[in-house]
Length: 388
Ligand code: SF4
Image (cartoon, rainbow, N blue to C red; front, side):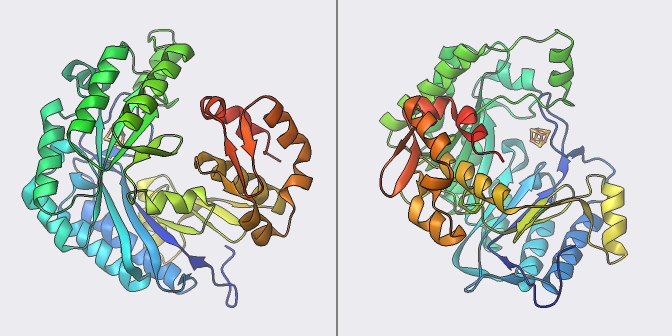
């Protein structure tokens, strides 16, 4: 651990991982377990104890942390009271700034008005709902537990409870998904009048059910061109519907950009609590134990439950800050970068910048470096250039 007196990291945001789901979706290899029979309350107490461990060695940034994000897994698969107790006590350790953002990820099948009311009373002011698709057939194929109508019901219940800052997650590039179905999902999401929509290309986790089928040649997914067409359709439909694409996969009305994710894209400092949660501060990036039993045991013994820890050297920090910053479509601010690292970006990365400009993948002004429209589609090729 890199936590010593006099070396107290200043934390900008806290992530809490809830590794429970009702059942596993076919594409998913996130660290999450089917809920039945697992020690949920014990886990929540361990997260609180972990927060207290860190509070003895780290501070919130001045004015309080910017955001708390409860993700998973399916946080709403467990009683709202448990989430609220965690939120309360984590804030005792890391107070939230006035107007700070508190997001909870939801599965539409696991929530109702009563559940949202409890979240709202506990201070939750943003929801991220895993819609994924609006076609029954696709949802069933993915192994999702919800129906298309559950998505609209969840959104309406949340809005009625006074939580209007809502994100809907959608996935394109699904096996068997047509461009028309994708268009239908985008339009359905827009019609729900939510201020934020995230459109992600399918990522087949290697250890997921679909990932294994794909490796054996038993599953077909849309090819790169078809996926790129779907992504382009999302960009067009959402722009025409008043959403600004402020990050490669994230679209929002003005004023509704995710505060929490921005800490990640700015390569800021955050503390991850819970199984497999990641943290980043100063020159350290670490990930917690992924096994539930081991995580619980280490926290109960008063140890930091860290599984992997990596020192981030200076060149890696520069590269990461560039490619994370380039995810934001406004681009990377050259002056802020130079102030933060004392490095002239145009000089240090002259070769890479010239190459990417010639390929029409990035555009540079005096103040900003940003992806071009072509660069948005080929972002990974751009990011590779900045890896040390
Ligand atoms: S995709 Fe979400 S709901 Fe499905 S198993 Fe993974 S974490 Fe759980």
